[in-house]
Image 1 (cartoon, rainbow, N blue to C red):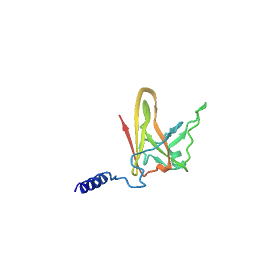
Image 2: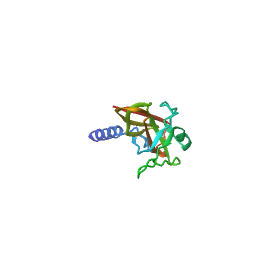
Image 3: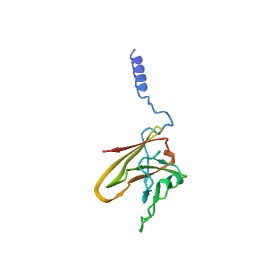
Image 4: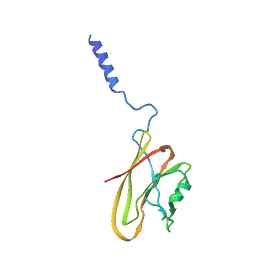
Length: 152
């Protein structure tokens, strides 16, 4: 009798350990590495409302962004290899305030790429600019659905 209780107890414990993660499904809340692109600017003919925040090729990217090369060691725009990488961008409305967008995290949950960022608003300036956050991500983390969320 006691042996049957142990067997039943063991079966219940094993059944309770069953996970909803399927073999081969490693994209549940997976942290995604990224690079932040530097020395690009939003072209004057672009407003903040984009059809999609994702850019999969150089032609799409060049319609929205230009290169802002400056002098010095870090003056060249960050290279993007669209054969291996894609870009996700958050573009703010034009503003006279100094605005900085800081990426906090990128995670992949099933087929949704979840991007969280923090917005830092600075002082007023005498000119208008359009701030953007340009993130370069490896294509192995590609996803159809992208959710970009500002955290406070």
